[in-house]
Image (tube, rainbow, N blue to C red; front, top):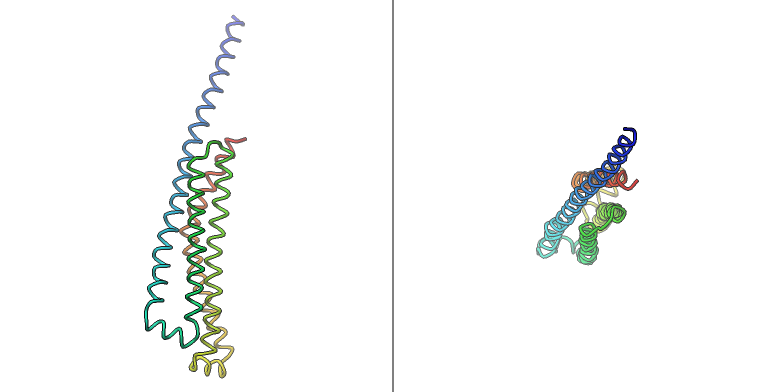
Length: 206
């Protein structure tokens, strides 16, 4: 009787390990699929953002009235150069997002998937900070140019320096905050979901 009980325990233990393995494989497949879907959305959103926002940049630069206004404050050539550089940088980011999607989509192990998730999160954060830094830099340069070459603003600056500094800082902070909220809502939600998948994968990998 004792021998039969021992055999039954061994058989049960063997089956339990088998069920655990099957469960982990299923969990990995599910997390793999979810992670791939999230990175695909990051890629899609970045492409849509590029088409819409950079399309607006291109359309504005071709507008004669806007071109004349920017030429008056010596900003048009700067905007053209900045737009070209920005196009190159953003296309490079989109290409990296595509590579991340392909890497995650073809990940063959838990460790590789975890590394790909961390790499994707890092690149998206670089992308967000690049865009926020661009907003800050262009705002400062535009303000300096307006004060220097716009007669009405120059006269106001001479009489009310402090008021102009406070007003300009307030406008730049509002702009920065709007873009920060935009990126935080769109990419932040996706990154949090991706990190949740990473933590679930860590439990499997232990």
